[in-house]
Image 1 (cartoon, one colour):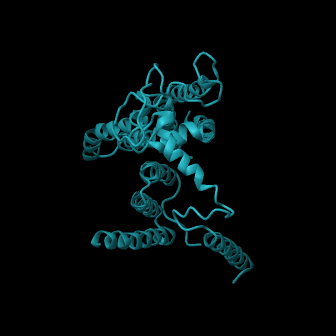
Image 2 (tube, helix red, strand yellow; image 1 turned 135 degrees about the vertical axis):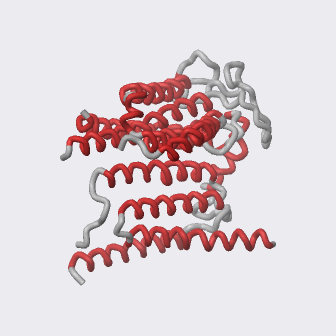
Image 3 (cartoon, helix red, strand yellow; image 1 turned 90 degrees about the vertical axis):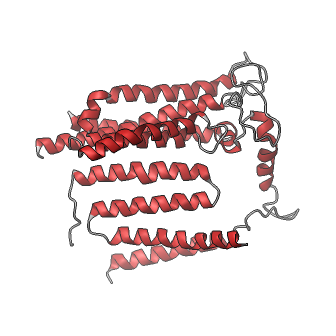
Amino acid sequence: MTMRNAAGVIFFAIVAVFFIFSILSLHPFGDFGEEGDKYYLEPKMDDYIIDNAQNETGANNAVTSVVFDYRGFDTLGEATVLFTAVAGVILIFRRLGK
Amino acid sequence: MSGMSKIVKTITSIAFPFVMIYGLYVILHGHLTPGGGFQGGAVVASACAMIVVAFGSIWTMKKIKENQLSILESIGAIGFIVFAFLGLIILFDNSGIFFKNVFANSVYLFGQSVEYASTTANINTAGTLPLMNIAVGLKVIAGLFVIVLVMAYASNKIKERGD
Amino acid sequence: MTEDLLISLIHIVVPILIIAASIVAIYLKDLIAAAIAVAAMSLLLSLEFFILQAPDVAIAEAGVGACLTTAILIIAIKSTKRMEDEA
């Protein structure tokens, strides 16, 4: 085994241990927790959106109302990423296509 | 590659409208059914990539230029930003916040309200969300299609020149 | 009862097929076949997202992963070499 392979195996082991520990610290799916827990308040945001999204935005699809209204800045960043990618591709390939 | 065989061209001509209609449906009903601007735009761009693969990039480049697609993508981006800035304009009631949904529950376009836990599909709802869906859909269609088209055309030209 | 059993079985079978398709894509020397294997992996991943009740992500994955990525990969392979070198 060369030096490079050994370094790759060690790095893979570190990342795998990191992921396994982060999976072990997740709560179970749909668990809202007890009052006084560290993460007790976080699922409250889900309840707020499920209860109020249809009244506030008028959209039947709650996912779209999160993507475009409650978390609109995320969509703005995604649009910027797509614009930058297209600008880079055209900048490189337009010269080659002439 | 100036297009594939006649069988592939015929099948593509038959399948293209169905994929296109499905993608436009996903975009326009983004506030009612699963999906939205990005998903529907990806489906429509897949249909256009199918055209590029079947008919060749030179034939497609004669029909539509990359400058026109570039302009279309910029129109989508500007439209999205404009609908976001509509929340800041004091003209409407309860406005003054960036990304505020000013058209929802009002008398304007797409302004009807929805009851809690209603599953009835009414397309005239949701305020600025359908307009933003259309803008993002336009942007994603043009962006993803122009990437595939320009790459195919450039590789074709390089192979013709022989380097 | 049988429906739950069927869904649990699909939850076991589909990830195994995803991993198998990924391993096939690594070991193939023909790069176009490898691109097709990646497309099959993407389609199975979209099926898994749909079973997990995330249809938005499933539509995006099917459109971008299975069609556009394959088209871009095949364009890149056609303008370079088709077979991987035995290094």
